Image (cartoon, rainbow, N blue to C red; front, side, top):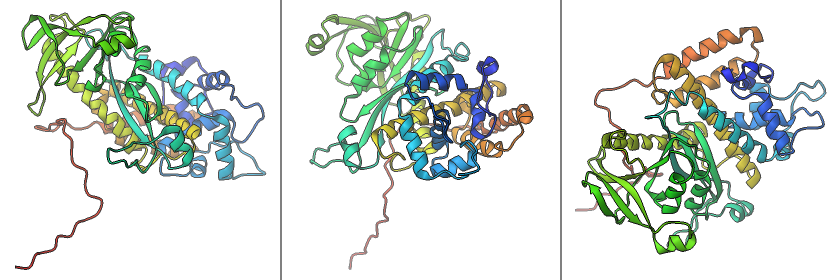
Length: 440
């Protein structure tokens, strides 16, 4: 359904239904992931491993439909006159045979390739822009899931009603493509997940962090390794430093590495140097940004402040993934730990496919990828995939052209005076409250 120069010389899946997404996701990549994890189908089934991969991706795009409904709607199962309809148990068994490793391998391969596309177009002062943040996913309540993932514990001694999975991701700021993710039990600290991601961030990049990741081990591990790998992070209220030069608005400071951190990682220096830039947010709150970008002429203070403001847009990526695409469901669909991980990797691939096509449409419309509405684009793609199931392959070019034109209708109109300040809103009450009038 979607087009990409990457697939010009690569064989792809048959052109039916969801398989048009293979224009971005060639069959060779899926086969490589299956062979690398030893899950390729030897016996020819109605749902071979490569079709199950597409099924997992489709389940994220059609969250409110059951597995048999998605199979029938997009015609994913291979034809068979003896058993025209697959049972739900057969679909479940096919997913269990596949496991989560092929989807994880496929996500890693596709994310790196897709983020590299048009990278120069979206570069900021010669650097690629990334944001790191964490989130959680609720999973179905079962003894197996609680033992594997754990759950949040409160000061009162109570435990959350549902087990939770913790994840930390690296996202491209200009396109909102998810480049990398580490996930696992809820009880493991976000910093441990972040350390594994920092090692894989590309050279000539700027990564914007949430202040919770303010750690010499993480920031120095990023900036001292590789080439031109920089950070931008807000300081905490209790962060202390010694000013070496400059002013309070923009100066060079020296921070001390805590003895605990040096005991844990002996290779850390006793002190480290950073640039401290003071900024004022949209709601009037002042904060200090710490960065390894020391060149004040090339990287002006106002440019760094604006770059940090763009980092807050990444919060919408989790909303798009967990609410818009996964339908604000209370928990994930899968019931077991392996299926839960498989579902998340499949959802990330599906999310990136939508975001990638939005980026391509934005280039043709001569706007930024973030100027398009994700929800509108998702609905357009969902409808187009259903409509394209019975289309003749010869009509694919016209179909692709119409799709790109329709995606341009997803551009969000700019309204004068509209602001999007970073605020935390109170959750609405689940049940209405009736106030009784007191007798005089």
